[in-house]
Image 1: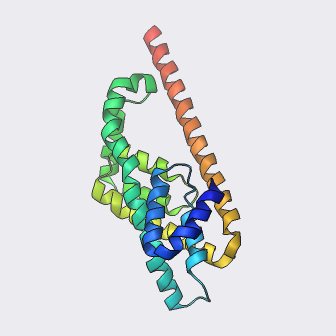
Image 2 (image 1 turned 180 degrees about the vertical axis):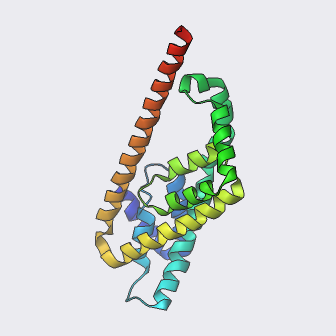
Image 3 (image 1 turned 30 degrees about the vertical axis):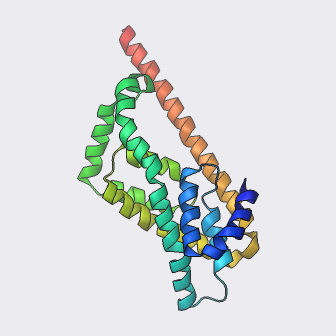
Length: 215
C-alpha cells in the first residue's frame, strides 16, 4: 500500500504543487490505510532542494506545511463529525455495556471548559508524528471540543508536525520511504495499544457493574 501511494504521490502530486499536498493530506485523513507521514516526508523530499536559507524555508512552508495542515484539518472533520454527532446517542443507548456513560463524558467536557487543557492537549498531540490522527479526531468529537477551537489547534499543531516531517524528508533524501514505514508502524502500534486499553477498560467496567448488581 505504501509503495503504491508513493508512486501516486510522485506521479500526480508534483505537478500540482501545494494543491496536490492539500489533496493528499485530505485523503490521508479519511482513508485509513494511507500512512499519515508519507505526504509530509515525501513532499519535503520531492519539492524542496538546496541548502538551508530563508527562501528555501519559506518555500517549504508555503508549498508543503500550510497546504498539508489545511488538508489534515479539513479531512479530519469526517471522523470528528461522526464522533460529535453519534457519540451521545451511542453512549446513551449502549453506554452501560461499554462501561462509559454520557454523564461521564459531560463531566470531562466541563473540566476541559474550565481550563485550556483541551487546546494544549489537541495542539501537542497533533504535533507528534506517531500519534494516530483518527484517535485525536474521534476523541475531540466525542468530548465535543468546539469546532472553531478544534480547527485552530488542529491546524497549528499539524503545521508543527508537517514542518518537522518535511524538513526530515528534505534532508534524508530518497530514504524517506523507510522512515515513512517506521512512523506508520509506530502509529499502528499506538492505535492498537489504545484499542486494547479501551477493550480492557470496558471489560473491567462491565464486570464491576455486574458485581455491584449482584450485591
